[in-house]
Image (tube, rainbow, N blue to C red; front, side, top):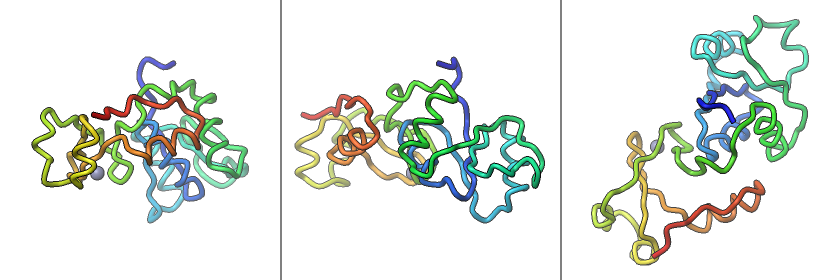
Length: 162
Ligand SMILES: [Zn+2]
């Protein structure tokens, strides 16, 4: 395990992989509006590991400083490639980052703060809630978390149920 978690940049083909990396709590960026050489330049400037399936990248574009060439076409298998290739601890920071904003979530200290922002059943069932400082979405570790863990073969986190 790296003492400091690496940052990632995925190319246009690997956005699903980027979302999975965010689910694992890692900083992963993508910019569909940028052309590949601009994306690589940005990845280098931000010290990100560039993830791509393009085997001919080195012939066509400026070289990324750090990159992992992904083999699989399946996003779940791609995630395993990155976890082993970069030596990540996959279970350590699960669901600590907003998948939309790529920002770390804050824990809600007192759940009464968000009582009017979630369904009463959810409020009653869970003790721990999280909020994205960027988009203000409230999160909890519900069935989607358990389903995602199963899909990605990850250990189930403590879901903070009441
Ligand atoms: Zn957000």
